[in-house]
Amino acid sequence: MDVISTSTDAFRVQNLHKSFGELHVLKGVDMQFPRGKTTVVLGPSGCGKSVMLRHLVGLEKPDSGSVWFGDQRIDKLTESQLTAPRRQVGFLFQQGALFDSLTVQDNIAFPLIEHGVASGAKARAMVEHVLHLVGLNDKINVMPASLSGGQRKRVALARAIVMQPAVVLYDEPTTGLDPITSDVINELIMKLARELSITSIVVTHDLASAFQVADRIIMLHDGRVELAGTPEQVRQSELPVVARFLKGKASPEELAEIQS
Ligand SMILES: Nc1ncnc2c1ncn2[C@@H]1O[C@H](COP(=O)(O)OP(=O)(O)OP(=O)(O)O)[C@@H](O)[C@H]1O
Ligand SMILES: [Mg+2]
Image (cartoon, rainbow, N blue to C red; front, side, top):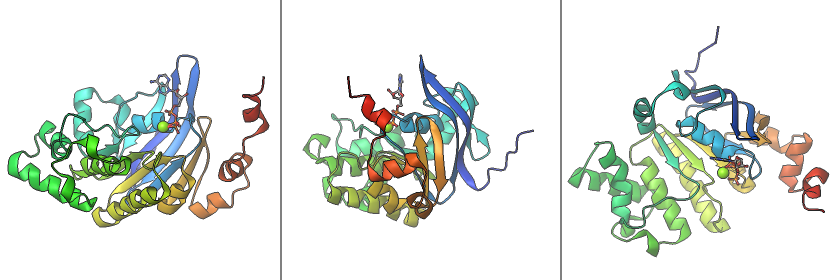
């Protein structure tokens, strides 16, 4: 019998397998994401981090294995059944994904209108509140095109939290940003976790960001979990894959790929 004692975990994936055609991306992944904590999934480009994250909100279905949101089995739900759990989860997508034709206000209010949570003055007040949290109150009426990359991330983050989610999923929140702007985003992730008691799941290959925000780090490599532990345990790991990743050293096999 399956043991289903997920009360301390916001999300859990068990023995997750996922292939796209011939490409076996997730090869039996087990991960737990404790409530109220910030868990970072760290790993090289292409190792399956975004694919894993998309499974958590039913944007991908596993070939085998299971995905749990608390005590609810996510991977068996239909699109309409997914609406309720998705309301409790904010998603900061890897590609910012603001609507270019909508103002900042309308971008952030979008989920409120879509889910019928609020409109008009109430929606406006909720938008102002989250824009205040990310420090962009003065941008409420502008179009996304006039924002910098870091500001766009902050607007996307404001949109991800406007529904007051219990969990926020961050896909590469700092990629492509300069170190100072990255620091601002990292501080925001920590502030939201602290002030709104949000459970955070951060997927990244940015080491500095991982060690700055994580309570726990899970190292994913080639579709498998190499190591899960505290930042200190990861830092001291002598596993070759982990040590190479931390030092930014490619293996002979990885270098062979670029040699003819
Ligand atoms: N819908 C899809 N169809 C086909 N292949 C896919 C699909 N989604 C992802 N892949 C492939 O699966 C692998 C893992 O992709 P994924 O986006 O999870 O990587 P990642 O770890 O998030 O990388 P990065 O750090 O660059 O964002 C890649 O080889 C990618 O090309
Ligand atoms: Mg990715």
